[in-house]
Length: 128
Ligand SMILES: [Zn+2]
Image (cartoon, rainbow, N blue to C red; front, side, top):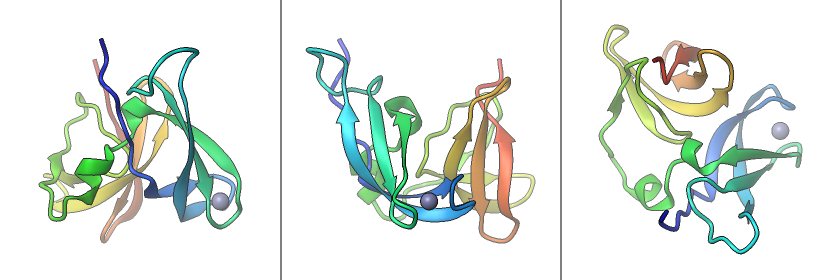
């Protein structure tokens, strides 16, 4: 049994239509027939700049309750781990923190991170 899941309704993500980081809002949650919304559901977000919508899987999104907590500890970057959009990560080697603003599903899959000084960077995740 999977437990109900509510992702953050306001996020800053990289919008590929605007080609920049924009605020987005949760538009709707799409669960499979007769199922409750959980981490495997799809969540549709609306870009507040271009009004286009895009979907993410719950597994790739930060939970609302965790998003609201201020000063949450940064997740240490490690290519073997999984990261979610909206979470703060810390890159030990670069001695810098950034926020995950997007996902790039490829092999390996990558996260798009907006670093305080270095700007937008792609980093590998889920490395086997
Ligand atoms: Zn946009």
